[in-house]
Length: 365
Image (tube, rainbow, N blue to C red; front, side, top):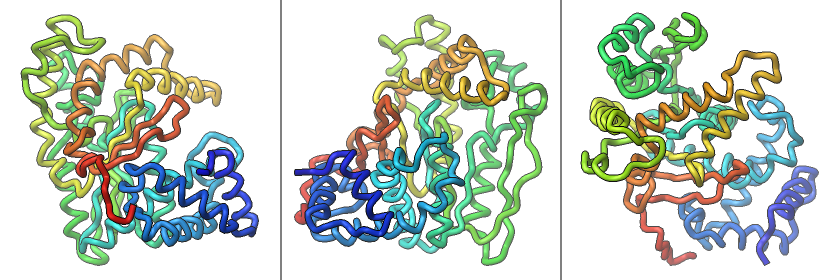
């Protein structure tokens, strides 16, 4: 019988307490790991290597758990997070480590995730894990590539539809290309610079601040809400479109944002790999964003009202709707290297590699 989430947590807890899994428990862990062929494929697991892979994962769990208090997570007992350590955070960190070992230049890993999908938290967690594994890892957000405040005022004057920073047209693409190229080409000891953006400046409009010097970077975790999205055929905007794209004005805005995506393709071409985080229902993003704002308010920080949140999230759906732009990335043969579909409880429901047929027939599995 395969292990349940409760049993998985119990096995991991006893292992952390110094009690090694019994052979029966190892059999449960192995059966659970191989029971989802798509996930096993994503983590490059077969029946021939599964025991070794899981033993290594358990060893890293013991080394990394002491860092748990420093992770950017809501205050809950460690036990609540152990399934995420086991089924996502650690295997993904180990996959990134393996990918870095296979090339002779820094790994540039892209993360695409909409509002509330946890992409920033995930990249921060991975950054800490990979540092423990011996890889100098830095984070970069597409938000760090915003044009300056003055430049965005000029953009808004030309196209008043760009009322929020974030959609295509509000970023300095050349800065992003130069940044990634400088990191990839830097010699040992040579300093490169990561652009940084402070969203609190100019009454919340934000502006660029001094860049962060870095050197000897092994891995860049580059995240953004539309990072890696590619233009779709204009025919996609001729028929019925998903909520909230209703009016001819909405349709034209969506079509124009689609065209502007072409300007980002040279930046996307610098990604070594792309991971897509997506909720099982795109509308969950709105609820998750509300929850995040409510937590900030409870901590005494400034936060948006529910009405403003709804307007904010809806605006981005009108620009690049997930139901239009995600399917070409995450369906079989798509551009993404890894897809993580998230359930309403924020736990991964599916993990798979769309570039390879989901009809996984590895001889060892």
